[in-house]
Amino acid sequence: MPAPSNFVRDIIVEDVRTKKFGDAAIQTRFPPEPNGYLHIGHAKAICLDFGLADEFGGKTNLRFDDTNPEKEEQEYVDSIMEGVRWLGFEWDGLYYASDYFDQLYQWAIKLIKDAKAYVDDLSADEIRKHRGTLTEPGKDSPFRNRSVEENLDLFERMRKGEFPDGSRVLRAKIDMASPNLNMRDPVMYRILHAEHHRTGDKWCIYPMYDYAHGQSDSIERVTHSMCTLEFEDHRPLYNWFIQQLGIFPSQQIEFDRLSLTYTLLSKRKLLKLVQEKLVSGWDDPRMPTLSGIRRRGYTPEAIRNFVGAIGVSKTNGTLELAMLEHFVREDLNKRAPRVMAVLRPLKVVIDNYPDGQVEEVEAVNNPEDESAGRRNVPFSKVLYIEQDDFREDPPKQYYRLSPGREVRLRYGYFITAKSVVKNDAGEIVEVHCTYDPATRGGNSPDGRKVKSTIHWVSAAHAVDAEVRVYDRMFTKEDPNHVEEGQEFTANLNPQSLEVISEAKVEPSLAAASAGSRFQFERLGYFCVDPDSKPGQPVFNRTVALKDAWARIEKRAGS
RNA sequence: UGGGCCGUCGACUAAUGGUAGGUCAAGUGCCUUUGGAGCACUUUGUCUAGGUUCGAAUCCUAGCGGCCCAGCCA
Image 1: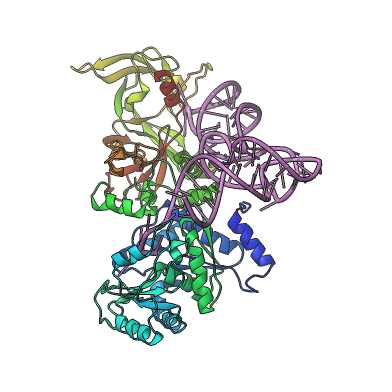
Image 2 (image 1 turned 90 degrees about the vertical axis):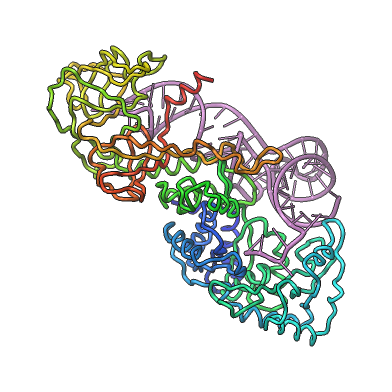
């Protein structure tokens, strides 16, 4: 597959050509903050960071941006590493911004000595007031012109823990009148008497993102530091620190974040769904997290193909969920074995089929892959078919079973519906049919055709299964679009999960292991959930098959 | 209203002064023991107005529209 061109790649090509970084190899990094689980949006960044470095013979580090001890946890570190590997990437160096706390501290002292940084005693509130607004310049802090000696002393004492949280900060001395608010003396260090997941209680001052990120890149000699668009305004500051310090000139390049319809990719909001138990956890198959879509049955290959196809640019847009689903179907179509499963069973009795007879019919495991082989499926007098596959009063263009109509049971026989049995509520509970013994395997010797083929399972041999049918998580294309006074949870789709506890699946599925994926013929792709117990499989619907009949019905209905 | 960025089919993305192309979606037909898959075909696009040029999606100017920024979050 040819590498898709994009503007980031173009920059690298040019930098290699002009030897912007001498003979050094391309170095990138993927820098997650360990405060949540990775999601499909991160997959785009991961593929870009690792993919580009790989293409140019460079390397990629995994670096945890762990500068805020109050939000970060080891659990997230572990899940992030697992996610990157699941996607199929292996990092060169494994680092943490906290590895650089000593160096960062030394550099801060250098900036103080160069009169480029100062300790400010203003409160957070006062700093905000001094910052000015979008249209008005800020005002200098009264502490802006302290002597180098006093700054050094105060900063040292901040580090030693002599001051309470929030009482002082270290700020870069840049320009309070800059039209770029990031340049109005940004905070470099804040006092936080908090236990850090890696450095414990060694520090009570922690660097801010802007002071830590670029320097971390520089230490690792990152040549191309990709991040999302909202950091464009930070680039001047990123460059300013590197320049003042005279260190390796990493360059920041911003690209557009991934957005998907009917999907939320905000760690804060995903965390809320988890904390308020609106989902079963970070790996709920409805979640756009890597662990969620993995449990749902998505493959890493499908994700990578998707990311490769959507491109990288600086345009803020939203992709249709259908695009993602296409790549999942495309991948699963090639690799998922076909099986027969009936989600909503309707009993079919073949009146002229011998009582007690069982035949083994041969079924193809994957028409897209001859090497997947064949299997035998038991056939008998009493079967289950899908409720949707029988209509007492069939509408136009409905080709499936209905009174007097002949259809093919996949790999079985032609059957013709003769009568129905209803319960007291008037619902059809049983369909009686006859079969043509000459059509075994699904072909008639006289060459007559049927318009439809339906799937089935033998009632006596069927395995009971739970099937979790997932739908989009939100009802609105943009889940953030809410009425006044509402929040995004109001857009949660109440039908995003339907649990079907009495599905019937063919016997070969009894021992399917967690994580294995199948196509349930005519229905969709399904993945065995870890909740499965021996003899009681649980399946998650990954994605439905494209459904032409559903489209016809929808068009007729609307 | 200051600054930064961005406007190409319905969606995403190419074309880097020289034929506006690809993928998804939608539609039509073929094929089919999955109304699946596959194959073929089709529809729809350069935000607007000026300018430079033999030639502009591309360069310039001015509008218009969208996104981001006033955390001691990242």
